[in-house]
Structures are given as structure tokens and as C-alpha cells.
Length: 269
Image (tube, rainbow, N blue to C red):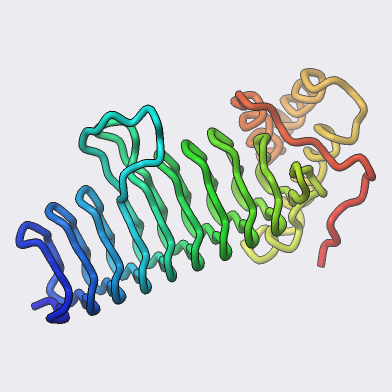
């Protein structure tokens, strides 16, 4: 049986695995589904339409599945899905979708640090870290293993590619291609996230492919379409990471962030 503190309120129509722990003052609404090994901290609120996969940790005062802060929202059932082994720390908020039937999604093994906010209709990949005070506006898409440093702000509908590192306090108003470092107000690119790539297990050859593709896109001095054509040629010659960058850039609707004008790059270590 779940261990539910007497001061918690768990709706009888919520589904909790047998080993779930629920702290004092927590509220779990009707229709919530909570997987095995989850822990719900004191005064956390889990709203209807929320699904927590196995071993999710929800800390004090976090609110998951709240009504979206969207003036166009007219009601309707939607929800939030949290992947396994994700940690949601103190006073984090994750809002459900503004479109009926849709889901705000947070992937597996993510860390949402204290007071960070994930707005409606966002999608986060696996192993994403949002440091303290990060704010994601609606419809933001974050790739796998992205690290967003403290108090960064990401505009609605932005796409952030895999393994991007975003500096603290940045204002992101353009899409950020995979594998890059971004920083500033507004955020600009500072080269390839070499340290992050190494930590993710990429080898010298793969990192070399990414550096080559980055130079073609941002340091070759040619128009974007010409640079993309060059990436297509490199892809046909075996540069698979360059192909990923080309696909990401071509799908951009808000435009791609460009390198900082000073030309400096983030140090590799």
C-alpha cells in the first residue's frame, strides 16, 4: 500500500503504485497516475491529467499539471507526462497543455531545479537540466541532454537542439542548433559545446564532424543556403552530425541564433 501522510489529500480516483510515498499537505487530484518508487514531498500539488513514471521525485511545494497561463485557453482536458527518474525540486511549476487532448512532456532522468517553470505545450527530452529560476515559455522544445543555467529565459516556440549549453541569465529568442554553447541577452552562439560532448561519450571523430559543420554554417562567410548545400555534400561523404545540423536549421521557423560578434568561443575545458 502507498505510504500516505494523514495530512495529505489523495483523491480516491487517483492511481498510485503500492510503494509511492506522499508527504504531509500534498494534494493529488482525481485521475492522476503515479508510478512505482515515486516520492511526493510536503505540500506538492499534482493536478488531474498528470502521469508520473517510475521513480519520479517531487519536492516541497512543486505544482504539476496546473492550468496553462494562456489567454487563449478555453478549458478542456489536457495533461502532463513526466518521464522516469526525473527530479522536480522545490516550487517548480509544470503546466498542462492549452490544447485539449495534448500533453506537456518532460523526459527521463531530467533535473528541474528549484523555482524553474515549464509552461504549457513544452516538450523536454531526456537528461535535461533546468537550473534554478529558469523560465520556459509555451511551446518550447528542448532536445536531449541540454543544460540551461540559472535564470535563463526562453521565448515561446523556441527549439533548442541536443547537448546545448545555455549560460546563466540568457534571453533566448532564436532557435539554438544542436551541440553549441549559447550565452547573452539576447543569446548568441559561442562555439561547440566540446565539454558537454565529451561527457556525453562522443569521440574525437564525431566532435570533429560537429566542429567542421559549425565552421561551415557560421564561419565560412557564405550565405546560409550555400552553407547548407555544403553540409549536404559533407553529409553524403559521411558527416552524419552535419546532416543533423542541416535538418535542424531547415526546420527553424523563428530563425537561428548566430555567433557573437566578438568572434570568441567558449573554452573547451
